Amino acid sequence: MMIALQAATPQLPRTKAVADQVVAVGETDSTNALAARMIGDGSLTLPECKGGTLAVGVVVTDWQSAGRGRNGHTWISQPGRCSTMSYAVRIPRAIATDESVNGWLQMIAGLVTLDALNGMIKEYGAAPNKQDCFLELKWPNDVFCHGLKLGGLLSELVLLPDGEADDDDVVVVFGVGLNLALGASRLPTPQSTSLQLHVSGLPSFNEMRDAVAEREVEGFRERLAAFIADPHGQAEALREEMKAVCWARGRQIEAHFTDGTTLIGEAIGLNGDASLILRTEDGTDHTVRTADVGVL
Image (cartoon, rainbow, N blue to C red; front, side, top):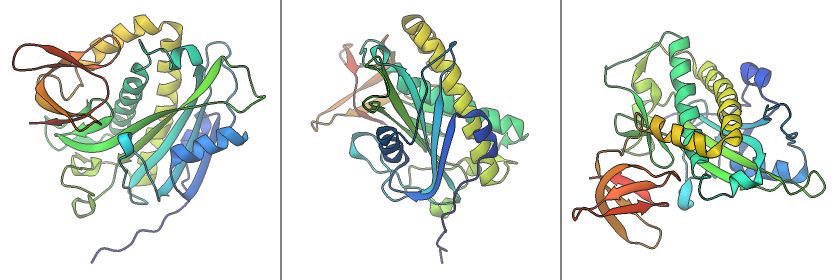
């Protein structure tokens, strides 16, 4: 018989030491939605970038009643087992709305999350159960382990409240959901997995969540500052970096579009704007910008 897990207000001492503001609640509908509401009413404030240092705010809960993914999907999580957190960063509107580079914001979120997870694993001396058990990113917004979904990412643009600043800046809220300590019997779908099922020697869930979030804050601050300073140069560097961790690259995949159509082919890599290159059987390369991607 499965015992119901009770939500508790997260305690994140390490994250609080590095973030500009941390909002922690036991339950909410969605951390992204809560972050957007708090930015709108001024209760979550992010000062302008000064001296190249970006402000990062964090909204965290132990349980979401209406967690969201891309394209209207839901994100199912369980208290005390899944990290559900949003990171709010104030960046120039020109970067956030430039379609030639803004797709990399989602890729940056993925790379920051991989860095945070791998850094936490190394810090605690934990080790994968198998040599080929490493973390990858499934374009455009999933964290994968052994071909299974360990986490999901959702990036959303939020406007600053009237009177707080001019129109030069906006806030990007990065929602990051991670299955850290779910047992096999609690996985929400057969395509899901959890970090503890692949890595031995991990600390408690609370320690994991805090250690990962601390690194996420620092990673967003560092990577986004570099991106803002040189978006096109960083786009090329990120494109190269993604080659090593892009799960779809080199696989036969099926892209499902919001209009109900599909496209089948080999994932070749990423374009300069972070869109996916899919090569069909006739040798034609197609650009995929918004789709759910599955392996055949």
